[in-house]
Image (tube, rainbow, N blue to C red; front, side):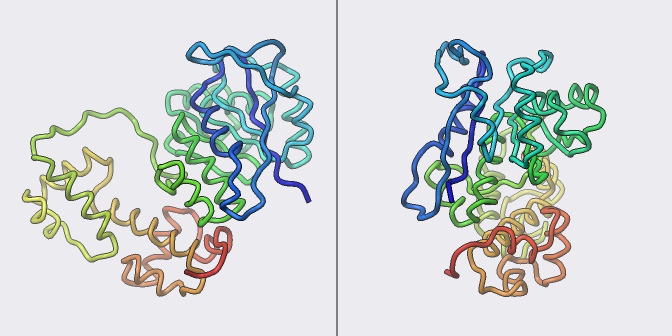
Length: 322
């Protein structure tokens, strides 16, 4: 049995950030994890040296023929959403899709997969700036313009730039479980998990910082005490502002009301327990995450994570109980 082969496709005018994220996640050996870690390689979409963003010039050690053996293929952001990708690359992607390889894209890389015809009828995402163009050009796609990443089993697409890192950690989570993905995230010094359905950031006026940092301190405190019971009144009292002011400023700062924000934090807590503590019953997870009842957790979990707690545990739990 060979290790899972991940291949990143490089091309002229390559986005160094997105490409670098892929290299950082999959190319570094991680013997401390005790799992059959990935093999990683880079192939060139075209001949000649590759000029990357920032003035970097690089060469890739493999040609597109390597895609015939890849288990996962990752397309970083394509250089121009209006430029048709090279036909040899598109042919290789179609062949990979037919044999069941996992095809992934970051940002405008989704235009390459779409041009190959492997996304028809799929739900996908891209950077919010490209969403309308993607819909117009490929009307058979269901474009989730407000998602960080979308997992359709053998097709996984991510929004812009940093959302690609979330998608890559999600792939690790799928392949090796939540505990391993969390350790990789810790090494990267990034949050362990952001839901694919979490909204992309869309520019909005920043709230005036005239509260002496009270809202920021409140949010930090709420995150540390997400499993506790809270009311708008108790939160407003802690922040030393009225309930109406709290709700307005909270929404300006986060895009969510305080209650919905808390629910999402509790779902994140529940996910962590479902992944890493397989001996805890669903009811105990619901109680420790602050939902009050198993039914309440199931309802919110399904709404936010698009699956049930039990199904989530079955998919992502690994290892022994802590």
